[in-house]
Image (tube, rainbow, N blue to C red; front, side, top):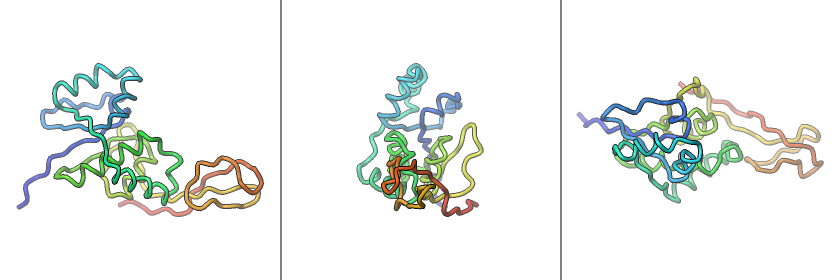
Length: 176
């Protein structure tokens, strides 16, 4: 029988906003420096500092290798334009920790983060939403002329006719 792997929760700002309970002694948390800064800016400094001084929260920089893997996966799914740098770093940290001897649970209500996490094989938990039920591949297209942008793009105007580009789901895969 294999020993039980310790669980580590990788948290974003919404986890502290919704006053998720992290009081249990055996709970370990992790986040990135950029999320830590975001939490300070949003008035969560005291909650964050308490978690750090009680050794419940570790601030860890994700590796460039995992960041690149997150970007490639998000690009393939069409979610890259909707993921901020903090979102990408959070996913990369979860990926890094999952290669260590942890059971990683990414705590977020962000559907794009959940979509990419599911594709990467990272477990996630929602706080105040039901969470995703499908992995979605997105396409960026022009409603006026029908032009399609390969993969995801941050462009807002069609390069052919100048009309505002839209996003639509092109493939959905149900999550069991």
